[in-house]
Image (cartoon, rainbow, N blue to C red):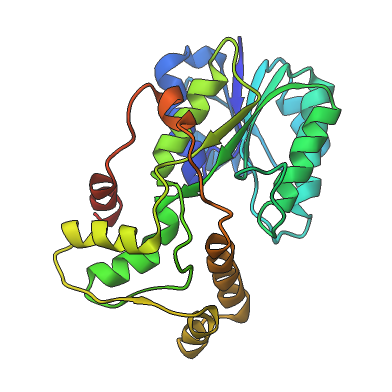
Length: 284
């Protein structure tokens, strides 16, 4: 059985391949990267690195030759080639190369979600199904690391500001999501859908946990979406960043990231890192 992982120089990809190397013979691993030289420098010499540029379908098809199982890590939006087209390129290449199974990192409840973050994932899931490839959709909730700017600011004594009201999020460490992905990839009979998530918490609960581990005291302030957006504008943030961050707060406020499953814990075979320990880890 030969396994491949895309985007191995990214943070999630690094976590994933490091976990795969612990459980699979290195000769049965293919690392895919847009920057082959960079990936080769980061990985052991006995790991085969092949080109993995999502915009080059023909090259991807060659790179996926003799691969049985693929961990397909979703790309970022905003490139010259649309994210959905990039994703279709990967799926087309996998199909043409005879890949038997794809584990794809998706978005919470992608089949039902209707928001700017979910739409490409929903379309990608549909496309994978249409190609008839065996698959698992790893619907990752939210990485705790996504909140690093807010967390570090508060840890340094600044105000912990949020605009998501009582909206809940399933925060967990990115490395735990990546370990979950590898556990699914190497399973004999994985499910089609995994709603991966940590325990649902709101920002007030997250700030309370941070107060338990922070060396500094800080205030916590819940503001309106308009105030939140204006704060970024006054700080000189680019409009695109300001709008995206505000839209995410609105999405959370509307309940898009609320989750109650134990899929991640079950796949990992143990409880997730306690939130206080997770906070300590990412603040170091």
